[in-house]
Length: 289
Image (tube, rainbow, N blue to C red):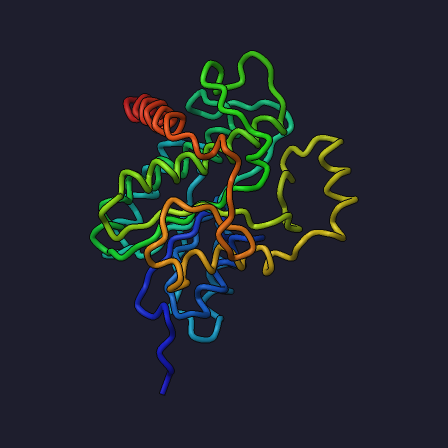
């Protein structure tokens, strides 16, 4: 007889789940009995990740969802596919993200780092919020970074049209992850849907592989020996998605599977509310295209 695992019967959707921290998170949660929705861009890598998750002892199964999160039309199509496939979504893990040394513009005319690292999880979460509420108790887990401590929300130039730095754009996007989580938790107050953000640590993954730039590439190569493995980096994500200790914790920031204190700029309620309003406007514009 198969033993009852703590997440048996639960469905978890994980973006960026074809490698690195995302795949390790998927494997970890599958080992607790969850069914995993694996979101990726590449069909072959996504299929391979699904096979890996299904092979985990105790796994509740896995399904592939293809989407390029830089394109808001595809984020909307992803949400629609998830709502069709899953009558319940117990946990959403906003894991996908990246670093780009040079400024790129998405199909929606948005700066790439801000679009992928912040607007995509913002849009996906809001599109799935009713299903999460119907499945409650449920959780939204967003992977941020301690890089947020160097970030500032430049509301006058969120798209970095007047000067771009890959590091500055990344830090701003990670600060946005925490502010988004903070405002989401406020809006969900009184419900049994929680929202928490986390720092996974510095992890050896394919981070920045598309456009690292010389300095970042050198830093990643030199620092690799000190970095966590993807499995180690995923521990806080697995904890945030599954631990009964966090059943009633919301609006928090986690590091090393413990509550941590983010920078005071990440605790600015006015900035969190302003970011939410700006984000709503930016995703509404793409909806009309």
